[in-house]
Amino acid sequence: MVQIGGEGYRIGKKLGEGSFGVVFEGDKLSEEGSLPVAIKFETRRSDNPQLRDEYRVYQTLSGGSQELMDGIPKVHSFSPFGLHNVLIIGLLGYPLENLFQQCKRKFTLKTVALLAKRTLSVVELVHAEGIIHRDLKPQNFLMGRPGTPAANKVHLIDFGMAKHYRDLKTQKHIPYREKQPLLGTARYMSINTHLGREQSRRDDLEALCHVWLYFLRGSLPWQGTKASKNKKHTRIGEKKQQATIDDLCAGFPEEFAKCLRYIRGLGFEDQPDYNHLQNLLSQVLKDAGEVDDGEFDWMGKRGSKNWGHGRRQRRALAGKRPRNDSIPDPGQVDAPT
Image (cartoon, rainbow, N blue to C red; front, side, top):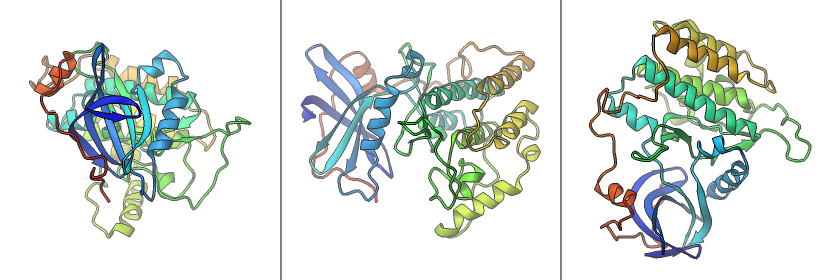
């Protein structure tokens, strides 16, 4: 056991890493039992620290509706720990990217439509609190933990690049600016982001629509672009501008093209019509003769036998202590450069 922010935790296996640092699975320990958590470490010497800002965004969102609370992880604490800052949030299930891989990179139209509706809903709720995410991608949407009431719910994580799009005092929309640094993931970011334009709600939605097309198609035309690191984002942006909406959506219900066309037509400060987009996605389900029953491709009914936690996660879900007691040294936790 290790003390972080005055509370006891057991740190388990590494779940992943990124520009922020490393994230471990763990358990928050108390007299009542253990609670599964995700523990994010970021070196305090980072040139671009994000965890404190991410914690503040979670605090802002925690004042939102219960529906929003069901769409983001619960935040437990933010505190220093040795040479690192640590953010502790509730443990969720698998990212959509992992589930896509588990389904051999092929989702049915029904699953894509269900995911599109759910991801759109949680993004709308975040926008309602005055925040844009700025890095929407399959890795940042997670299902709830299997075996829990939230198993079929989509959650949005990783708010390290998030930003208020309204002034906190005046509630006025942030001003339009150009020559802005690129923020986000090149594969999914909007064309305007590639062009160095300040991001707003429209850019979140365009990135989200690119995620839907990725699931529909299995890949996007600009994937695998060959160029030097400095030129790669530029080349990807050029390919996005060259790809017509009709070509991107060819072979799929026209509602997806209508969604992308509507989103790309939004002005910088425009309030998106989320209901319009939801109605288009509902039409996809209706025309396919499907209903929103919460049945996804990775569930037992349609495929993967691996939908569930491993032994250690099952023990945590059962309130038992995990068998792996190893913990990282507070001063030696690896963080990627």
